Length: 100
Image (cartoon, rainbow, N blue to C red; front, side, top):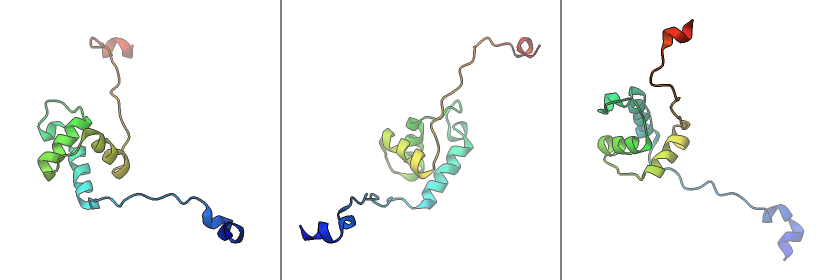
C-alpha cells in the first residue's frame, strides 16, 4: 500500500472518544445536589446510598429508568464520584472505653 510508505502515522490507531452524553450537564448537577442532600432527604430510612437507590431517585425526579450498572457509570464518569464502602465497626462499641 502506498500510504504506509508515504505516511506511516496516518495508519496509526486513533481511539474513538465514544458518543456524546445524551444528558446535558444541568440534570447531572441537579442529580448531584439531590445526592448531596442524602438518602434520608429522599425518603429512605437511613443515609446509605446505593446505585439501586440512585436509579430509583433518577426515575422519581427525572422520569427516566436506568439500569443499575448504567447508574454506576453515570456516578463514576459524569459526577465523578468514587465507590464508597461503609466502615465496619463493632455494634457494641464503647467510645468512652476506647478514648481512655
